[in-house]
Image: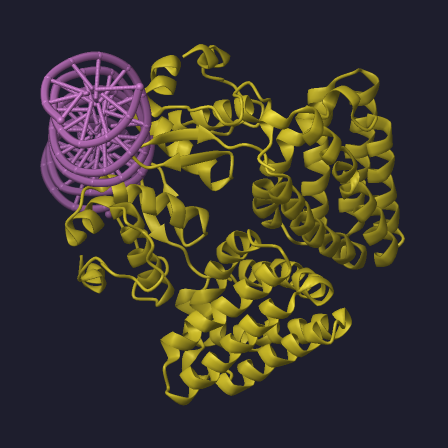
Length: 236
Length: 236
DNA sequence: AAGCGCTTACTTGTATGCTAGTATGGTAGT
DNA sequence: ACTACCATACTAGCATACAAGTAAGCGCTT
């Protein structure tokens, strides 16, 4: 009950909101709340409570729960309850490994196939990231960060790769949120993006791969320290 | 209505069935029916019809529909209907590419880290595949085929990679089913498995990678021909 | 004949009621 | 004090009812 105060309202116009259905809005609202750790890992979360809090029926909440369970953010134990999953270092490391495998392959393919138009799109995204960082617009940067990775997949002709990556990112996003206070500075991340794009533009798959690996390794540095600092949030 | 005759009964004890819930059984039943092309791509499929046919309510059918839509096997158009998705050559090729990226990374990691126990497990699976092929037990071979890829992921310490691969495989499974009549002979596939395992056992990541790439390329040969032979099943 | 508008029969989305399984706390019995 | 049992208050899974949107057929009007 107490914890649910984190859910004051349904996020009617969510940034990433093409969702017009109630269950879609509930899903976005809950995922944000979980990723931003407004729900403590390990705590229970019942369909009925959330439905009451959001002023909707159990049905759309249930569908959101199911999707969040597939993303590894909730654990549904039938007839027992649903719980916010604790963060697992092993699972985060695994998700990172798989994500790296995919994004490295994408970067190499982009280096081979990307058209000039796509490269310009990516340029624009990096420029936007510089502006957002300058303005201290952290939320805006996060959106443009996602857009860059998605844009790279598009440039490689792997439009639907993003669906897979999105699922993997969910595991990692809570860690990223935890690391916000002392995260890698945005300008460093932006330069890493630029390095990836340089490798792609130079049609040099090895350079693109190296830059991507470097970029996706950031989380490895912070993970052990964060797990030490917040043991209650972690499973292992 | 006609098409639904493909759903005589709920598959009460499904081979991969740890599912005890109705919605889980409906999901397995429907996925099998779709993959085995007992539902023609492009045709509509309504929650109510399936529910009636299976003797359950709309609720579990709906949940199965949602998951099948996430897997790319159904397309839910709100207030309009749900349709069996046609096979997209582009999407199949994309899923193959991503799967290759993941499984190559897994094979390389397995070559570095797999323990003797795990290698023995994989040996046993290949031996089982030889028996199944000898007995003409095609269904049994398919199960052991999946088990081999999953087992390799386990050997690499990527237990949860299988969740991702499962989603990607769905896209490819209908093509595999289409290719059954003149598919690559089982003994060839088994030798490819053995080649992968050889590379892993020799701690030679490059050899494991090459063998894996070879193995996952099989579908590329059949795809164009199948799309030509069954144009009504394909989108592009 | 062509086009507009209504009726009707669908569809999925949402809400609500019901069932069965689980955890908990108290109580009676030893 | 401890144990066994039971009443109770949860949980999620499933069934049913309702709402809102869509598409197609049909007849009317023009």
